Image 1 (cartoon, helix red, strand yellow):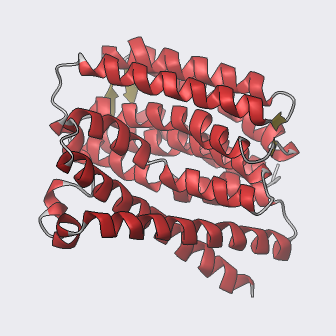
Image 2 (tube, rainbow, N blue to C red):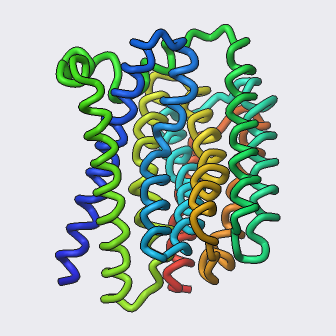
Length: 323
């Protein structure tokens, strides 16, 4: 029975990531067909799109009455984004060079959002009013990012170039090209079904193993839902598009804190369990500080990437209570 639910969990995660890919591709195609600026499409649909798996799984957790999974998923995803994704990207590229725009805008914003998030969850609960505040902060962040990057002279084609589901595959995917609304619908249905079975399998596995559901969420769901960000950042690092590789992580971490926690909090109060608060939260603070300091130094070297990966192993070992 345990193996069955583990297989369901893996299959559901895979379907959720694939459905998010369909959703982003079709939404992008529809946006361009409606004459929406390619820039706006890139910043909003593509930017938010990589966070769809986290959002879907968090909403499913709330509807199933397991609200502690939401904050655990968000914190676990942010830690995985920095330690796992940036760590692997630094190893692949040998050295990540940080551009000034990330230091001037993204790093201060991530720091401010993380501090704001700490105040929100310090009482171990996120209620309706706090969810509204998080979503308002997300709206301000999104508008500021759009208007700030509109002034950036860098071609948006660089972003399109590193996305795994874009130009080189679009020619092969005639189905999406001809029927974007169908794939938009399929993507939404796939996300809903996959998220439901992801959370259902997590609850069953935690029951069978007699462990906390938030433990599975902060490790397994966090890694699984971070796969879109991992693919984008690794491709960007290989193409030496360092700003995209790191900017993707900055943006995703802000989305996770403001949107992934804020929206489910409107449905019902979110609980922060002991494991997430006592281990996840201190690691989130440490990881965010390390990431911002590395960014200010303008370079993330190969050895720093290795250190990030070792820290992630330490995080998992600590969560599992092995020391």
